[in-house]
Structures are given as structure tokens and as C-alpha cells.
Image (cartoon, rainbow, N blue to C red; front, side, top):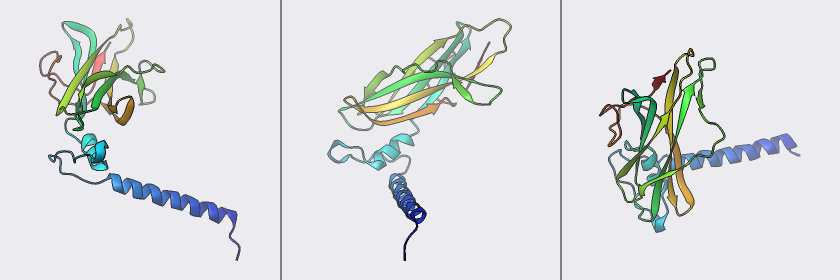
Amino acid sequence: MRRSQGAGRYRQAMTRWERLLLACACLLVMLPAEAPAAPAAKGRLTSATVHALLSSKELWATIDVCNAADQPNTVGVRGSMPGDGQARDRMYMSFRLQYLNKKSGHWVDLTSGATPDYAAVGGGMSSSRQGGSSFALVPVAGKPAFTLRGVVTFQWRRGHVVIVSTSRPTTAPHASLAGADPAGYSAATCLIG
């Protein structure tokens, strides 16, 4: 009996789908939230270590300045990330600001097409590190206020190779170690205008 070509393509797609499901299942190894990251084999990050990094309570972004009296029309974005336990790895953060498009309901980058700048925030052996950036805005008179949020992209690198990367939008409440204005301020969004 001869198979149709359509059936062969379906079978190949199922095989790839099954492989994808198997790969995803392997990445979903659960660790208790308080458990330290699993040791890496031969300097590589295990899927359990990656999962621990991405689900860590130390991985967050927040707005720590929003139009403060001494910093008018300024939005401060702060991020925190855990170390991966590898001495030769470095941690980096990149910060951007987005506004809420009221018509579409989508968040839009204030500057699109720009290559993000990454700031080194520490080595992989650190328990966690924080970094931040401020954005000074110039509101247009007579225009309505904009709802803004920050997005922080986190990278763990080995040399020039990015071994793990993820982004988080700003949420609250989080404790900034520096820069919050007023002290202790943490918010998911900021209204400027």
C-alpha cells in the first residue's frame, strides 16, 4: 500500500512535535524555590540551573522613580538577577521604557530599532545583583499623560556567549538597594504627562 505525501508530512510534523514536547518536559524539572542551583557539569548550566535562575524570587524588574519631586518627568527602572554559581560567568542587564498604546492596548517601546546597551552588574558567583537606569522625559503640553512601564532584559554570559537570556516587565513591590525615590518606592507602572 502506498502512502500519500500529505500523510508523510503529517508524520514528520508529529515526530518534530513529539521531540519538542520531550525537550520541554526535560526543561520543566522542578526544584523547590529555596533550593540552591544544581552544580553544573563541566562548567555547563544544567536545565535545572536554568529553571532555578528563571524562577528565582531574585529575578525581577520594578519602577523605583516616578516623577518624584526632585526628579520631575523621570522614570527609574531597576532590576535584580541571581548569580548562576559559575565563577567565569558574568551578569548583564539592559533597560528600556514602554508606553501603553490606549487604542491597541499593547505596550510599545519608546525607542524602537535601537540596539540595547547592556551594563555589567556582577559575576556569576554573586548571590544576586541589582542595577538600574533612569529615563528623563519631556511631556508635550496639552497632550494626555502616558502610562509607562520598564522592561529589563537579563543575560548570563560566558565570555561573549550569552548562555541564558530573559526579560521581565516592571512589577511591584520589590526592595531596591539604591536609587528609589522616595526611599522604598516600587511600582509596576508610572504616569507621566
